[in-house]
Image (cartoon, rainbow, N blue to C red):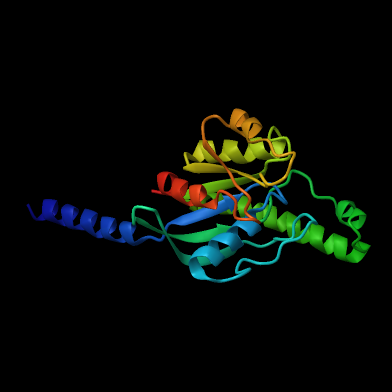
Length: 213
């Protein structure tokens, strides 16, 4: 009998601390999809902190290190609350060439440094996948979703059985095509937003409650 009670106590002990584990919500996607813009929007809306997750740039790989904002609390229309640690990850790419940064106006020295840091950022992003409880895949709605990078990201998430919400960002632009993203990833809920302008952001927050449970 003592052994049975010991096992029950151990199980209760583990469950207690499991429930206290902070949920990690990761923002993933290719470079320049709008992950940091969305992360900043979330922090401004719910923490009243502007540009809390860093600056954004038209040059790829502005975010080269994993950025974390702890204890973000959002509230649904019916009063439910969701608390999570927000993890903004560097953009994932299959190829990083310093010459691409030179084309954007950077000198060779800075371009090589950025390429090195960006490569490390991609590796770190992939490593962090194992720690994610739910992931928001942020895609540029003006670009072709059937890229090797996007398929690789989604494939990794499917293999891990990670809950996923796909965000079709930049719907304020004329070339945005949400239906194409929905057709590419029909297994997931797709929400169209403009993280920069806040367009449709309320629907995004409400949908997070369905994914990040």
